[in-house]
Length: 156
Image 1 (tube, rainbow, N blue to C red):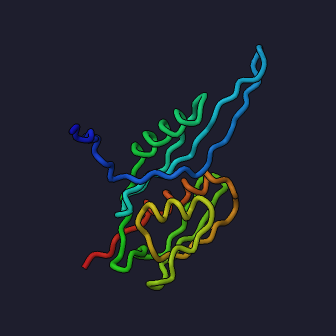
Image 2 (cartoon, rainbow, N blue to C red):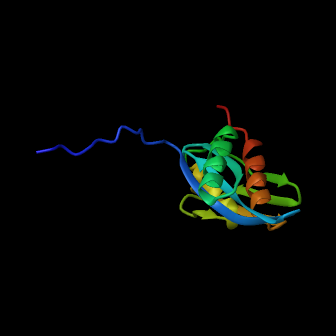
Image 3 (cartoon, rainbow, N blue to C red):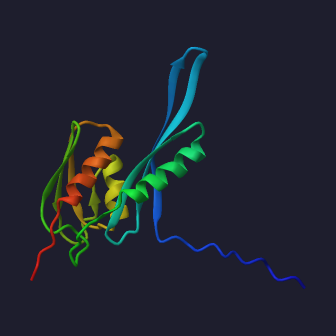
């Protein structure tokens, strides 16, 4: 009896989530050239998270490029014992502004659009956020990264 094949591929500690896939059309001399842009959030749900963008002629390659770009831009987020952030902070990227505030245990992630994805993959369980200015998914994700990178852990 043949034994089943074993997969030796190691399971990655990183989780990846696709925030947006957009079809982009560029007008060139011969007509229109279509490509895809993928915005990906990569995190380990234990305080490390990154946002990446990949562009390619097909969706699968764009996602793969976005994942590698996201892994290059990883930041560390200080978390409290209640899986929240230590203090309120603001994030800004382009016209996208957001406010991040710690919240009581059990309140959950109160956030919209790509901000929620970044916060969940960072491992934050209790937080309040408000998105101001732009509704652009990529700029909001990068503004969240900007706000989280400005956090400082309390020292005893």
